[in-house]
Image (cartoon, rainbow, N blue to C red):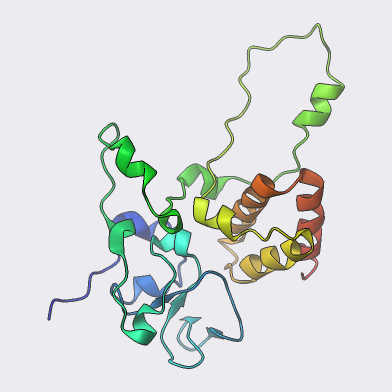
Length: 207
């Protein structure tokens, strides 16, 4: 029987410090769509989330670990490991292949992970700007949003704050700013700014 595949180095920079992919091989841990304290609670003795029934380690960030959602370790299912394939060198990527990548294994750029959340003011500035003033400065490039995270954003605005709170509660102190920025960015793809800001207030107040 071949040895389990270890987490590849190009994934290590994306996953949490307590992700089970750092401890177990491919197929030896589960991947869930979102945090759930009842189904896979945090185990302080082991330093990771465990399935409440099987005791298998659970990753709750499929778009970071590069694997689709599945109970691989709990049910002995072989995962689709396309997200663990070594990235192509810049300029070598096949555009046709990129179009058919599974949404759940979208790569999160480093720029997005370092992006700090903010309330967009550019629209207000445009309305009250100075018509005669011209600037050569280019507007900041908007960060790319992980497709899997955007797909997970609730369509119901009333559920948005709870969804954000789930992700924030699962983040370590070091990861909190990056997680906050990512959920805000993903939410803005599907909801207006005022809805996102109100949801952030609820999430930061405890959901």
